[in-house]
Length: 353
Image 1 (spheres, rainbow, N blue to C red):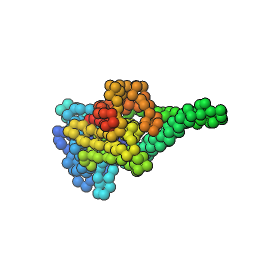
Image 2 (cartoon, rainbow, N blue to C red):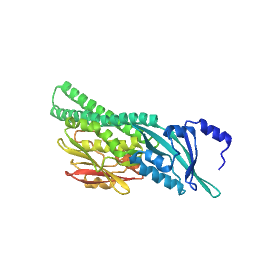
Image 3 (cartoon, one colour):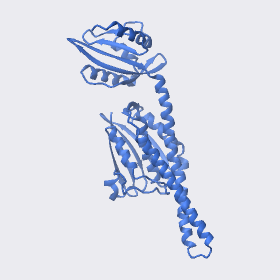
Image 4 (cartoon, helix red, strand yellow):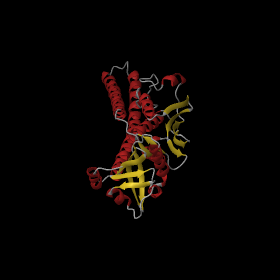
């Protein structure tokens, strides 16, 4: 296939990695200087040689995407890691199958996104830590405030017939202020969750175990202060799926936060992950008070009647479970739960691999 001189000049000067591979001749018919410089190849490149430079955990994925493209399927950007000696870099590949007469070419370009991935990982770690800390603060702040509100209500009953109007006035003031603070916490958490859920979905291939570890790190660190035992278990070291990292971590954070609210002191919360042939199952379970059976059918409805405050007065939102279900469905996944009163609850999320 003839490449116009102006277009060739553009690719020659570009920092992106342009390539053209002839399926009939089984060889690369064009590579621009940036491609050769990035891979630092001495010999003429071949598909097996380049595939060997792909990180072992990404090789099967990259090979499957190449086969899909060569058989005529539309393949979106493919991210993978390239290992060069002791260094590891990320690239994003945009492949296209071009047909001209009897000739078929696998053409496209790739870009070095190592710096972008590094910055994104830092942001994601901070975002995950922020979500965990907000959940912990919500639990720790709302619990004593709820307790203060209950005590002030009891005190108000005790002094209802007292002649000391000042005591009654103070009691009502404490009750009103604690209610206001609890509402403030609830409104803040609701706003934070809705803001996160409202942003456009951007799915990327990620190691699900790694990002959930980061999400639960703060919970694990504070489990003693939370008076709960928190565990994280998985079937293998790495499980890769396509998800919107921030949104999916918000789902996990919300489920763990709910488990904290409805689990008694000394209880146990477990986050698990299991890989199947075509899917991944993530579970969040607790041995708390469970969900009454009358609420099972409507739990994921907007403004469900299942909405209730936590054991220590922690606020809940009637939108929370509905948004969680929506985010999971955006990922082409399913969510369901098993629950029995006084025996605990387990939520399951099934994601396609």
